[in-house]
Length: 404
Image (cartoon, rainbow, N blue to C red; front, side):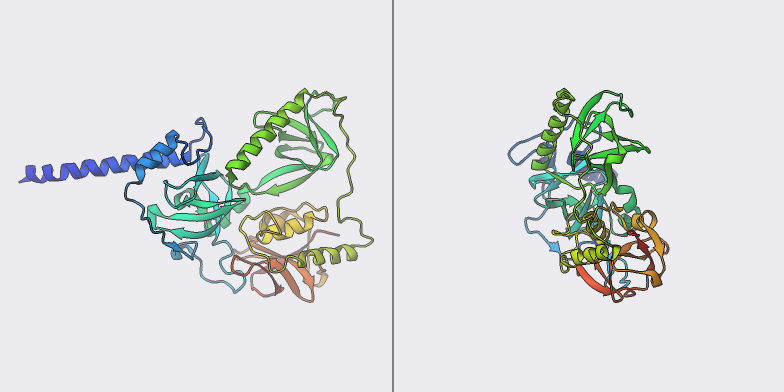
């Protein structure tokens, strides 16, 4: 009898084992392993090893009919409503948690065409979910890429909100007309290239006079700190076209090493930033508020990088101030701890940043004071950019003055 049972179960066990191994192979294929050679982004009709693994593991796991839900996060992970305006501000926020990258696909299936990549630490807004458990997929938008990624490759919701400050990248943006990149922190060091006005490079180390930067993928250099401003940004997904453009930009940067100092001399003239010619702080503050008001009604996008196409609360204040020559942190906690000075409610003026917290002392939301006891802020994905009373929520923690 036992022998008969074993003979009956043995084929089933083999089938389950084979399915598990195939699933593991598919997961390894879907995400780019750190240190592994990258064969490039594959498109439909252009097979690579990753696509072969992907195709072989689909089987009957996915139904042709897509059951897309409106609620972007499983209900168990959504925090209870804290207020009308701050409701679930971070419920649509997600951070890629992979060794290297994960594919963004056109469908919630490994059959879907690869549209781009989300690298480790890049951020996205969750638009919808499909499936459940280990087979749950998120429909996300990150930068200019919109598509599907398995939920297991993300930190999301309140877990993402708790670590958001760890996923901001600091860049040096050139303010001079042209700035040399040198192989050592000295004006006597050899030039390895240059950067033109407005170009950005990732900061590796900071110093009082020199910044160590990632000039190209393979080249590290130094630039004079006094001719730069610091910009904080999130990493976003890269489309096929963006990766190609980035490779071309890297190629051009490397080619600059061949150009002589006499043919492309350094020019440290710093143009006056647009929006800084004001006769008084009052005039400047009025201009800041007036500029912010033109975005009233725009949508909220978690990790968004544009006032016009949508951003989140700290992106809203950060990009507003950037228009007037100010460099602000990209996160609410960064603006609360690092920018300007703390003032009392009696000292508040239009243009000041009002800070809120749903986690005790940690700042989780910011808005721009516009006068008459009101703020304009990018509230959440449901409401977008709105005007609210300064005390609309009982999580108010303080005010920052970054102007004077």
